[in-house]
Length: 293
Length: 326
Ligand SMILES: Nc1ncnc2c1ncn2[C@@H]1O[C@H](COP(=O)(O)OP(=O)(O)OP(=O)(O)O)[C@@H](O)[C@H]1O
Ligand code: SF4
Ligand SMILES: [Mg+2]
Image (cartoon, rainbow over all chains, first blue to last red; front, side):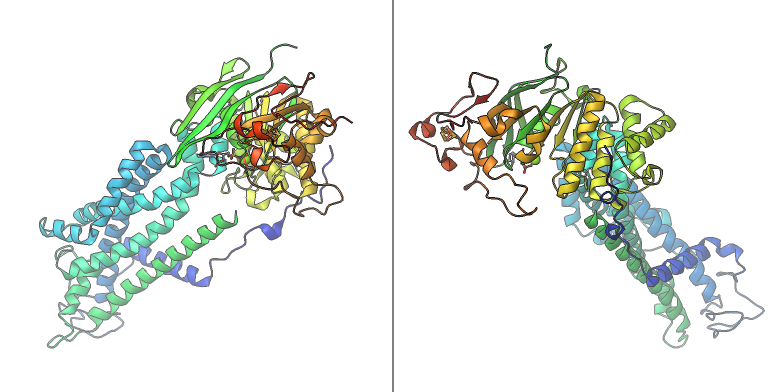
């Protein structure tokens, strides 16, 4: 049989060519810089965030070459504190989302793919838990389990995030499992683990990643809120949230130090906005791709 | 002739739906000999897909009641768990799905998908599987197969994707292939190419084929035998050569009337058969086609016509058969 090349040509017009756009990449770079700085903080020549600089000592000092964002009421470098403060915020947000995704995501994929009573029950349980406001539960547990450490935060926030992740991943898995290519793999003799790893997970991960990023952003905000209630990490440890909480009392005389408030706030807000933007873009990017295919 | 490759006897598939029992396949019997190509034709909703999937053993365990028997090369398929059927899938029986858009994984390269079916199906090593997959791409007539091997499905046209689907389904040399509307959604010239390709593969590999379609035009030239399905039953069975001249069932006649002619522009709406198929959730009395049949008489509404032979190799289920003899 001869093939008519004309009609079996690749139709490039049909190929979905979409761009993520420049803002996406600016946000991505900003996130990368913030994360890298936080990880590498001890090695990039920052002043100490805790030890006071007695050579250029000043309480509530102004912005200067030695102290880019000025100093706080204890004479500590605010820039260094912002960069170091990101460490606990990032640790807690990424850590708890990883925990939630590993447990919630894995459970969701297996339950949804296997279906049956296991899926029905676990879904009902997760829906029930979701009806409780997770933030309140986190506050309640933390206030009975002082002092707060990053580990406790990861554990509690992570567990409270499981139901949400479960629901999202379950939905994506059900959608993927209905696809004919999964059935096709099945009738070509593929067993369940292979189908899950080769067919389901590749289809589910874009949704999961987008949701993960949005989740990280909301955990950073949650940590900020906990810090306002004094329920985040305790001094001398500090995070973006506790920096803001400290600053809250210091914008009035006698200190009246706006640098303490503005810089951590700006950094945190820009970071959250970037995460949200990226998460949203990824979500719609992957959604549209799926719709087109 | 020795025993047929596939023997389906009195097959029933009933779905337990929230609104009651839905008998989608209601007592179907037929057989497919080695090397034979049969067509199963019927309107949308007549149960063709359900029948094909039941023959594959693909019905879910829950929510479906099966009875009757499907013997593939002597092995019973009905009510066997998937684990016991897996060794038959791929090497004995394979299925080509309707929609090439959804039967390939959009996020995996097509070459890898074919290679994988070889790794899973006949245990080839990765390297051999990839080499074999490339050969298959050549066999199904994909131009510059080395490049296409690394393409994602979205980079291929519908016709090309269906070629990939065929390559993948046939990779483990199945004895029987079920093609469920393999060309629906493709335009007419490409439909013909895909059907030609199936014919070619069938001839080369000596496979038996079941071609499922709602289009009599498709099966009229490419099959040995045709089964016409209506509301979950076979209402007429006849050699393809007799289709135009010796059909007896009014439903077959109506389908023939609604089949596209060459002179019609493609995609023009056909004179569909007036009325719609019966609601299978309600119990049926009499002939399922009675409400739409212009030959219907009183007996049609009270008694169910059984398949009966016309003396030759045809059978039909009708009290007032069309008397075409040309
Ligand atoms: N999983 C299911 N649960 C309940 N009912 C079903 C299920 N699958 C199919 N049916 C019903 O069985 C009947 C036959 O459907 P089937 O898909 O086999 O038709 P078909 O002949 O393949 O039609 P089409 O040309 O549209 O593909 C329909 O009434 C359909 O609603
Ligand atoms: S049995 Fe009666 S109603 Fe049914 S197809 Fe024949 S003539 Fe029509
Ligand atoms: Mg169908």
